[in-house]
Length: 349
Image 1 (tube, rainbow, N blue to C red):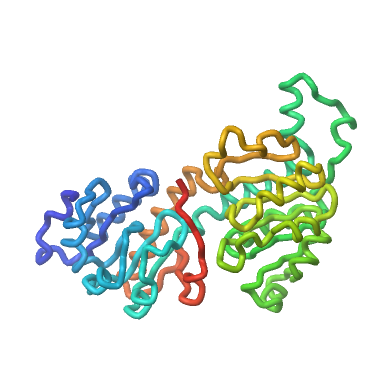
Image 2: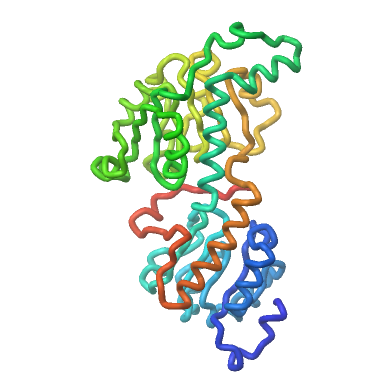
């Protein structure tokens, strides 16, 4: 435990916070100033390098908050009589928490997904621009001595400005991407079955069915999270709806797309894709996707940049301070009782 935990709790009435952030490291998500703020406001039991369950159990009855993703079944939560918040700092809501038990107790289960949204949105825009103009493809050609000059390398190029664009999903990622696309004056449609059409219209968006979006869009951004309903949301039938030379940008979760069907469309040369997430990571050395020239590859890099990681620590400190003052959290994403059971997330390695 850290030195701050050795203080007698009767002499220090600051709320107690358990820090066990694996797979994150605390120095990655907390800047020096954020860590100082955390420790000035709370008694921090630092269990980052302490795997002994007894240490966690000893701190649990007094814990005001837990930072991390430990297993928290109902029996464990029952012993945490002062617990007010569980701060997931990995990025996904996992089945490590008995959510009904937490909600029944008024415990806030918070996720750090919003910290990644801007980074992912900018990366998604970069992939779209690459797919529209063949930037990395022609760079590869140059390095192999087969580059093409002037119009010869632009036969399939399109402008993003004014393009027909579709967003599948309008959560954190979609809301971060939309203002970036506004600068390109795109003809935008949105499909999100979790949002009423009138809500999308209130935000100045044009709602569309999945089929309409796929058939009309030149550029499609797959931004949906994975749930029992959205696994293979883009299967063979849906991908076949895409027009020839459509561009698909996939930056959310691999399970929302049927990669065998995507391979078939790409090997036929019908669509271009920029892909950041893969069913198996690292991608195997002999994976046939490596042979595709109409693919822009990325190794799950869209969100995990230093600025995004450091924002997590700031969000945690801000929201724990809010809760300690008797106010609701405002920066992290709260797990919704109606939705959290639908997620099919898996840890990012």
